[in-house]
Image 1 (tube, one colour):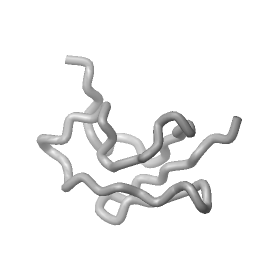
Image 2 (cartoon, helix red, strand yellow):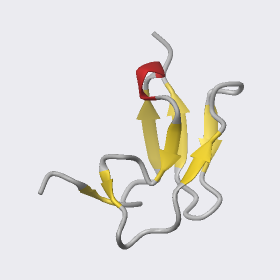
Image 3 (cartoon, helix red, strand yellow):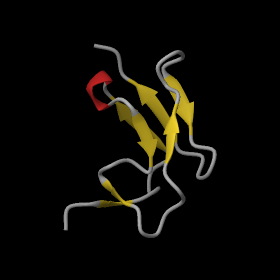
Image 4 (spheres, helix red, strand yellow):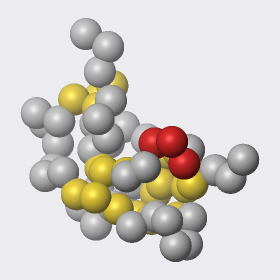
Length: 61
């Protein structure tokens, strides 16, 4: 099983190709996490999950 445990980090760096971003991400096991929410990261380049507090930062090329 290659899935990461959900919500184990507090900061996630993502690329433009990863959009749209949701928490937990598609790479995370979600069976033991909060409901999936999509995060509006495009305008500011940063977003924080309202459930777990994980911060997502959009890396620019």
